[in-house]
Image 1 (cartoon, rainbow, N blue to C red):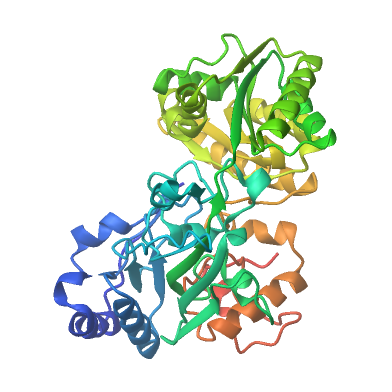
Image 2 (spheres, helix red, strand yellow):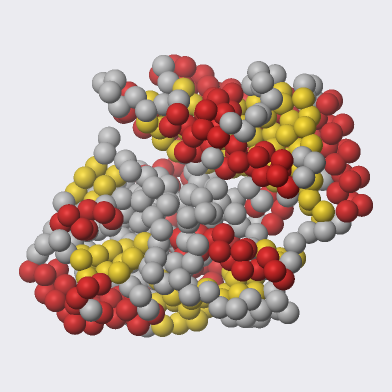
Length: 495
């Protein structure tokens, strides 16, 4: 199951390491095998590659020098932030450079008048809202890992979070980016103005998973903290009723800030980890949050209560204060890590379906898991159908890891056949690249790669990610004749 590649310390990479030490400082260039193994994977530990060289950048110039030297040497590089990604997006190249950005943590003073702030890529997500809070402002994208994930990584993966239902993903909250292109040139995409004419290159860059360049500075849009926030925890005796409630709320014309769902297994794990006090005996719970003007929130909250009761909710709990609201969210935010309390190992998967298909997709997912003798815990953004099934397994049981990995892939295909996507916010990375051809045609993928080649003609920026069979940038799109060199090397597959 776990792929491990050792570093390829060739004459080429050894010579590059010497040039990098001169450019950025000996203390910032790691080649010792014990040290570089620290960076062999991101939050998806199923794939591991030990990089030949690790560069600990501390300034934009360090990034520019590193990328430029990699381009001159023809050596691939991979940018890495906090390493919390869950798709192998920051998996290093064994014969390349891992460019670590976690030390680039400058955060400019908040521009409250224009509701924006400029940060370096290593800034932690939650720090932005912390600095904006005195001005009654906040940064909307809030991944569950917001205590540790970096803004640069959020931009690379177009991260979302619980409140993306109402406020959108990272792409909706980035105004501008300073980017080091794969040849070392520095360009500026977007800026400080709300809108810009011309092609939306910033939109293309956000979510490109490090294949188009490296962001060294980002200007973020801040939102006004809403006048009122009300949070409700609702318990159900069936997954179908909980899922039906979600569709009924949206159908009623109500757009909550968040609608999160957890099933019995996820609830069990959260209780074991943080004692969140969710309704006893619940087969599923919803965490529903409304925000906005006080009068509007109060009126809509009453409607949501009525909808939940009409769908057979057996317990409805309203947070009377911020402390109780935080406890409701604590169970949801801790769920991924908490699953370790009920299973030795697990896959965190990420797919999207139309929310109206939640009941049937969750039922089919359970049938597929039962067929393999496995369990799946579900905790996800129900409001926009962004599933996060956690496939539980035991490494000690022979063959179970393989079965779990297969089930995780089958769930992605179920999402696609249900009218959805193979990822909502975790990205494609290394893990899902072979599933891209299940969602997109060959022509779709060729068009995407034309864009990649425009930014990175030599293919050295985070190679081997996103695309099932990478093209050489000199190739003409169309039907391939013969075996592609990447296919011959076993790095890609033709579908």
